[in-house]
Image (cartoon, rainbow, N blue to C red; front, side, top):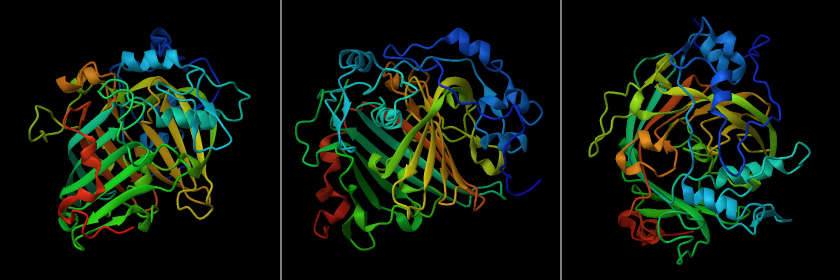
Length: 436
């Protein structure tokens, strides 16, 4: 077996057919479950090297090579509706047709709440890609989030065991366009004019211990990236602008803009909707998988396991989903990542799978980000209407490496507050070493 999965175009019948079809749900977020059952593989079956050709048209054409080469298999589960929270659905219906794209591509006009562009895109809509990108940005994943455990494993494609492990924790919060958790619809004190914020802290990460990264998602996507990094070795906090976004995070294979979800500015890409199709995606029930041996420290929760080549692939179920194929091409010709192709679940608009390309069109990385149904996760997440991020894997085709993450995610958590995202209080620096 080759050390590298040689990626080439699959044989006829194994390509992912792209077409503007009626698969994407409109503002009611309903799915045609009978159609999904008819089109998809039999629930309980396993897609592997012996039978992949039969359903290869439902898999990304490059990812198909992992299956064909015996590097991974896909366990198939029955289609399941990931209906968003009723408040998000109600807001989408109430404000449908109100959001607009103005002359400033970084600002969304007249947006209040819900899915900004709920009606399926017309085939001749030149701005369908940008609208879909805004839907991805404002998909409902909760008004706040607590990730008390993020276990990182750095892996080599040629070895079975991780080379290095790290432990992080994180907090996230929407300041604007909130739907469920008070205050709704926005946090009144928002000096950064931010849509949302994310704080990552290294708990047990070797030389990175106590490092913190605070990132704000701007309401105005045209503004420079806003955030800070606390470096314990220097005892000071530095502006995020001082760090190159093309460099990987903490020696891993994860690019900062591809951490957990695409976090780059929408204005840094030219967006194109390639089409709508049916595709197998890693959306699943957490209570029906075989988990890892790792149990959460303070919760009755068992993490997602990884298997396949070098343990690079999350061991979760995949199901057939109506899928939006969204392409983003970098506006900066010097950007290390020149193109990304996102496969968005059309019901939730989250991206469980995407690809990153180099400047010459070479495939660089795969990103696999499974989501569990909230009612199959911890009781605290039940009826939240938010798909729950449970695992993450970035596979670097060039270096034969991958980085895997096991996540414990709680949404709409009361003890996540705006004060958690105050840069002047980051770690022991307390703002004394703060500089822009």
